[in-house]
Image 1 (cartoon, rainbow, N blue to C red):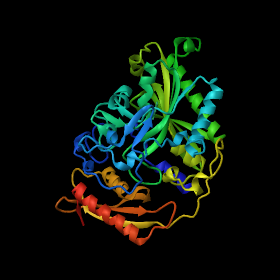
Image 2 (image 1 turned 90 degrees about the vertical axis):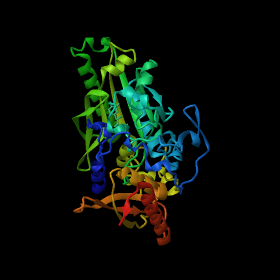
Image 3 (image 1 turned 120 degrees about the vertical axis):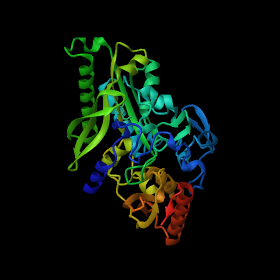
Image 4 (image 1 turned 30 degrees about the horizontal axis):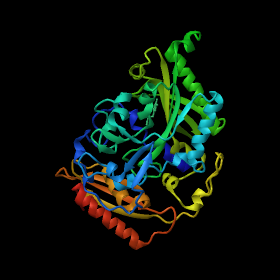
Length: 425
Ligand code: DAH
């Protein structure tokens, strides 16, 4: 269990923490990869989802989301996740957690917080980025990190995408829960679809005038008290600490960490909303706080769930362990099936990114891909760089046969070579 908490801690922090613009870790520049390797579609081993979905009152078909165009990088696998809305299932760990947080807000704020959990995940780049002041050259806007439907439309990469529109509509206390989408690496804490909850509370001068504090300090203190209370509601009497950080949408910005199983665990990001966002929402005289938390991260700790893929499992041995309203239940792993490791080495080129590799692996192996790690990396005298990746295949539900894995691995090799233009070694 300690190893698990360690793993969570090691997991990459939100890309909104970074101020670094233009270049990602991979040296990738925003928009350069419009000619992404995913223009060519590959067959998915995943089940085909319903051809017409109703999402947040909008009818969506597969052709609306997955398009064979250079400005689209949404694979079939991602389409199959749209509309599943795990956070709206009362017997699912994510639904149980969402309901527990709603309960905390209802009882502490007299049910003033309005809850939205069916807003459509297809949003404009304006909603996802501009409205929350994400700089034009911020790494989160790159095709390497975000799923684009076309140059102006994305699958939201955070629930903050709805802050501005709800403020404009006049809401002043609200919680937004939804599925969010990010191109990412493959390991036990990262999955390209996960769930977030956003909270916003707006104050008027009347609220802080008699407090002896200015609006910003008043909001920051209120925010901290609210979230400390929430952490105690979920985790009991835990040790907590506040860490100063950076987000484009808040100032000051903080992270809350709790001491859990001998490690500091980052649980959420928050801060006092940038005045510019309020101003654009017609609220010049107000001050607000906002927070965003990842439901999977909290649920993995609260329910002892060791791998993020389990949230998507329909295996009764998983689903039957959770009950509406019961937050404290610990997941009992059913037998762990053996992993299978396959290594592949290749000479990379300038456009190589690990996210692109992981997208191919997921496209071929789906949830059978457990982890992709770089295990060797060197540059030869001619300046050519070689990477060796170890892919772990494992099913959560059954033993895999050698034949099956070999076929997956040959498929991955094939597609890596043809789509990424790398030279296999
Ligand atoms: N949107 C951030 C992310 O996805 C989380 C977040 C941080 C939301 C601070 C907020 C906030 O509303 O104030 O990483």
